Image (cartoon, rainbow, N blue to C red):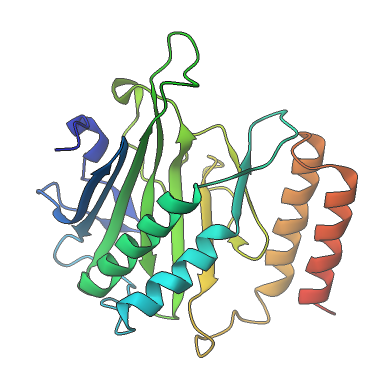
Length: 253
């Protein structure tokens, strides 16, 4: 048993207009290794609700896990007003999560998405009167254009489960961390302006590329994010200019 409170796995959420039924989720992976707990489940869409998931993935599970591990390795985060960037997930946990997500994507039906929770016990660095576990939580799915989506509502956060709100990670993030990705696409805030941490990658080379009409808006959103990271002190001027130059190379006029 993971020893995690049921409040962490409340269903009945929504994804891009996709209401999820409040029934027990199917568990794909449930592990605990030396205080590192991992749970991956499948959530089904309500009958009659349209979805745009390309599940199950037919790729070899091991090859898919290796690809997901590469994508996860690109993610780093910074705290508000902090200057240090930190890998979103430690190497061993990242590899385990990539393997579990690959299993979920190859097991999920066309109306299911993947919900994951990684909880790491950290007694040694626990601040006074704060929970001892560092939690990373979110959802994942592949759309019909072959893009792998990953949305977090917690990102290496210490939070009491009783204080969590039941928001959908694709609509709102509960973490105060700022997610940074070298090549992932930042999709910006939700329609109501609420912050969210949501990135998407092309999963394979034969996946459909984004429309040329989408590139200016996507580039503008990334540049705006870079400016915010600089203002918040998460990245310095040198890193800011390097990333701006990379965006210019990826999206030439």
